[in-house]
Image 1 (cartoon, one colour):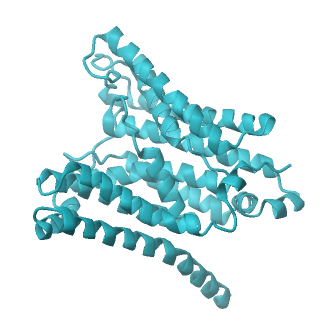
Image 2 (tube, helix red, strand yellow):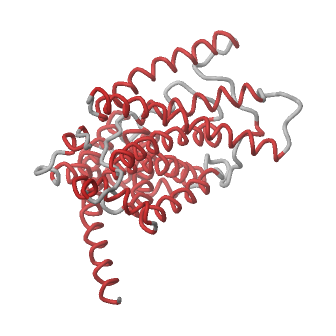
Image 3 (cartoon, one colour):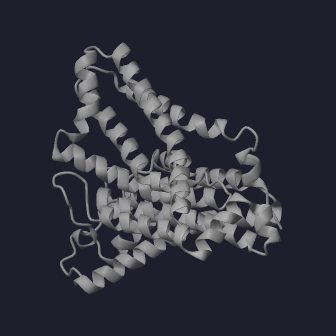
Length: 366
């Protein structure tokens, strides 16, 4: 038993080595870019690494961003574990946030004097969460049907459906703005009764982060401590073995894709009720792709989802903070982030030379 645990620990450590080295290489590259482009390299570099911890606002913002990325990354990881690749995360997050804002405003508009009691509020919030999850799942159910009956690769259909969904939601927000007479491309703000409590004022960190941590623990436990989770992973990792072992391969793959959409939709719910309080045009931007990057980092070691989310959130917060100093151009932060993303994902691409992920994601086994 001791030998088995030692072998398992060594295997997990080998799984961590590649992602951690990739992240370290990305951060070193970012530091070199700052050194060669900033007006005051030493001060800018120090600010880059220290700013996210310099105040409660920055720290809370970083932790809040990390929690939203973690929720979306769970969705992306579940599709990968099922042997599929969901590229529609952006549209699914946006759709989940949109239906959340519309539903909560319909139930209790902002400024209404009769605010529901705690029990009723909790039920309404749960209904909004389920609605957001179902919306995200629907946007993956359609690609699943297309793959099943038309043999269209899931990675293609999820991406195209997301591209089609985003302008439709933009139009929906525009129609609401014209109807309510608003000045911004945003739905009206939800009632304060439906907003999660702030944990570290004046930052955006709120109680939804604690719920997301619980969800992460539950998903991790299911994947690695239950028989159904083990079968789910086997179906994604070794589809031929799963097929000849009598496992429901297609059912597990479909479940992984639907869960992926549902988790992205719930990310939209948490973003609206905890951070933005309204569905703003473009609030989802980058969230789906960053979550996919995190899931690629942690594909073989899901426990790395949490540190990877924190590192990316720290990167985004640090990049924004150094722009405020005026020592680096705003465009350079996008370059820094892009270089880091490229560095930490190139390991994944290199590891797939012998077995293309795109071919695997598009293949449907009987």
